[in-house]
Amino acid sequence: MHALRTSVRTHPLWWYFSVTFLLSWGCIVLAVWASTGGLSPTPEEFQLTVPVTVPAMLLGPAVASLLLTGVASGRAGYSELWQRLKHWRVGGRWYAIALLVAPVTMAAVVLGLWTSSPAYAPRIATAEDKAGTIAMALVLGLVVGLLEEVGWTGFAIPRARRRLSALWTGILVGVLWGVWHFFVSYWGGGGTNGGIPMEIFLSLWVAGVLVGQLTAYRVLMVWVYDRTGSLLLAALMHASLSTFQFILNPLTPGVPQQVYPWGHAATAWLVVAVVMLVRRGDLTRGPRTLSARKPINHS
Image (cartoon, rainbow, N blue to C red):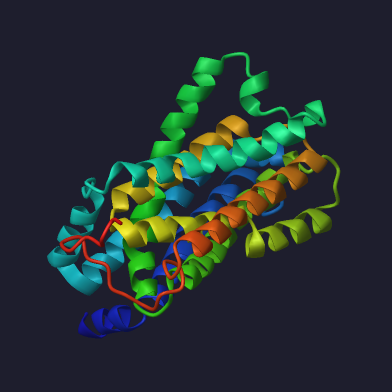
């Protein structure tokens, strides 16, 4: 046990990403195999596994974080994690940033595209039960945000910040966060590619992961967390992204599914650029250790 504890403390990111991917991907692959008898399901067959695969995928980051926190720090680690999760006194403007960045950047893109073609109509515009759609989006967003950020921000972000700037922490975790979605994109994406050959679909997806919306948004999430030390706020910022993705994403298969994410990536990176210009040093300052007991200056 001592050797394991030493290894986790010495290489926390390696352990976290390895355990997270093993749990999430392993459960997805097992569920798909058990349901379809192979690893090449159709999108329709994959949908049958969603009640198992999606919860398993979401639990991966949280379970990895809790396991490794216990191994590395025991009760003290759990106490520190809980302090960050209940840390809510961070100033109203940080709540505004956390909750509004996603809907504003998404809406700017989807509304602009919608004026050029009805194919870009957001889900909420075509939904028969708009109230039900919004309610479902809110519930899914909160669940996804909490489960994922107990891992990504609860464990990985603070440890990456001990060695990297906020910008490079966001890029590292953002790219791996995008890669973590691979199987959902690969199997589930077959229903949205609209006849686009899978090799082209995956090429666009890989490029999107490396420079796409999740990476840019993660940089902004790291910035907000860096300035507040609030895991709760990180979970809410993630929830905002997931909620408005469900509400605003166009549902038309084919080209709209390829164009819209790139548009959102561009607006998100634009916000990152503005932060770098207005808040000089916030994203590029050197490594630091974040503590829930000593919140970072909120100015």
